[in-house]
Amino acid sequence: MSDLRGSLRVRAVAVVAAGVTVAAGLGVRALAGGQFAKYAGDALYTVLVYALVVLVAPRVRPARAAAVAAALSWAVEFFQITGVPDDLGRRSTLARLVLGSTFNPPDLFWYLVGAASAYAVHRVLRPREATAPRSHGI
Image (cartoon, rainbow, N blue to C red):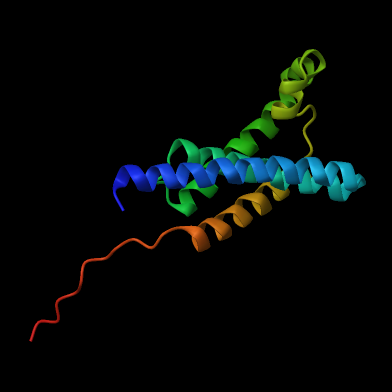
């Protein structure tokens, strides 16, 4: 498979994964409530970030994608301490969905759960890289 075709395939899978993740998040919110829905939403938020990382960088290794997704999720969570996301969220639904509103320490754990889950799926779905045959010097 050529690099271009491989990148397009990976990007297509990332777009589908992002869509499924958004649908899952909306479904969890519609069907469940309370802490389960909240923390499932946190994990799915990071899964979505992971899918977007892969969309932007289709050759990214799963461990790096997981680290970037978790770091971005944590950065947004810590940004909430400033109060800016809460202020923006009062004026914009999109800002509220992307940035949240208030810092909640347990969210940090659930972002890691999301990153680890996305990593595991990516490892299973990722095409195996061709390796050069080893010469067995005789």
